[in-house]
Amino acid sequence: SAVISQKPSRDICQRGTSLTIQCQVDSQVTMMFWYRQQPGQSLTLIATANQGSEATYESGFVIDKFPISRPNLTFSTLTVSNMSPEDSSIYLCSVENWAGDSYNEQFFGPGTRLTVL
Amino acid sequence: GNSVTQMEGPVTLSEEAFLTINCTYTATGYPSLFWYVQYPGEGLQLLLKATKADDKGSNKGFEATYRKETTSFHLEKGSVQVSDSAVYFCALTFSGGFKTIFGAGTRLFVKA
Image (cartoon, rainbow over all chains, first blue to last red; front, side, top):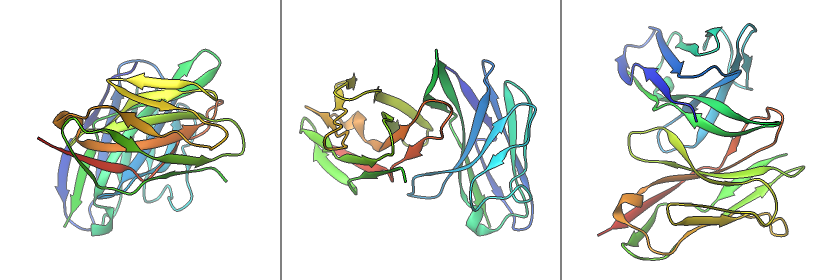
């Protein structure tokens, strides 16, 4: 299993500002994922971050709005840029468990609860 | 395409009641199936999984059986506790780094 920590755990931000969320894993992993969970909703994948390459964004998400860094195999950051109240969500970092010849279940961080005023 | 459909919540039960949360899926192959649980204020954690047809996943008294013929993976527990109050997500993925697809989630409230 993997233990994942995120910072900050929560924040309240002003419209137009940016927030960088950090994700730290206690083991080396190939792929890290960033999800958004809006209030009362399911998870929406924002992007997949591989070390040493550009992140792959899902439809509806762009790099200018959600730049991602992946400097090594245990760390990633997600920045929410030029925030608006619609960005108020929980942002979750996750990694996949590599089980022999296939990827398997995911491990999640505790999430970052963002409120934009 | 691939998708997961769960019964809508919230589900409200009394302690020791029987729980079923329905989950059906649409997939173009043979996915692995999962149930994740999210307790208040926390991230998701894996509850149980099944990787092929007729497999039964079980954990903490919860069970779910991978039914290929009905494309279902219903979650059951014989006697719920107040501490089971959480949001439950059904999910699927394929091997080879395919992204995980989550259902909408079902909120469970258990009353003492």
